[in-house]
Amino acid sequence: MENFLGSLPALACLCQAYERRFPTCHLIPMFVNSDVVNEETSEDGATHRVERRCALDVDAPRLLKRIAGVDYVYFIQKNTLNRKERTLIIESHNETFSNRVVVNETCCYSVHPENEDWTCFEQTASLDIKSFFGFESTVEKIAMKQYASSINKGKEIIEFYLRELENEGVTHVPRWTCSSICPALPAPNSLSTSPPELQLTSTPAVPASHAADTKDAASQDTKQDSGALQGDSLAEIQPGTPEGLFFSDK
Image (cartoon, rainbow, N blue to C red; front, side, top):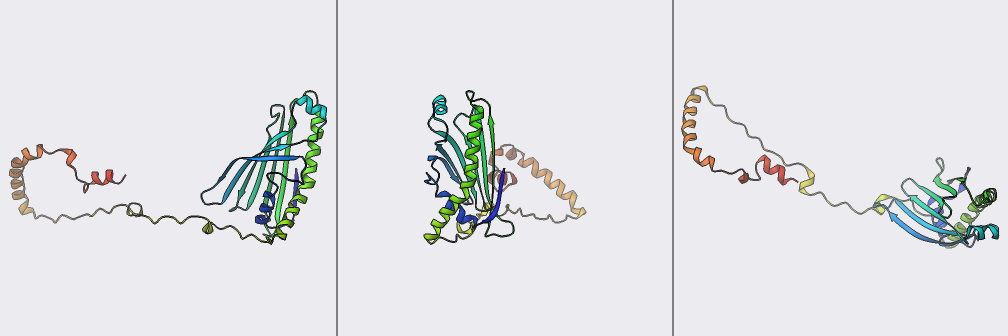
């Protein structure tokens, strides 16, 4: 594991400089080419992910390449830029010979907690050699050599492209804000603002002296209307009832 904490420029400028090494970089001779296999951006524009398939011409003995039967070694690299959190995470692993050798590498660029004009850089890597035609120790030496070289070369390459941006007049990139990218949210409609209000009416109190007369009159009306009520159907419930409100508010 290697950790670097230095006066690298602001992350926004650094990310633009980093992207300039693709699809290929003349400063990395072993980096032959790269193809974008997947790219996506979050709805608010805060997160941008790019997945690339990279071809590397590893500096290995010709005999070893002939035995392995390959000219190039392919790696999968995933870059995740989080403009809101101000981080750039780069993850890569080998695709070639993944059943024999497992190489994982992670690089992280983040804003310095005490100085927003500085960028922190952290790089970690792991190597697991299961079997490689009896050349396990040779492969391990090659991998360690390439890793040490990439550490020493990484900052140098970033600084080269930063100078290139500076010569083009790009010395500052405004900090990302959601309001500058996010589309305006639609105005809420009447269905989403608040639930329908139910008006409650109070029933006036009936004096006890009239209760008996009312009961007798109601019984007579019930006998006359019983036939009509039996013909009614539940399907005729109108939207003004609680049941209608429930089903119409889907």
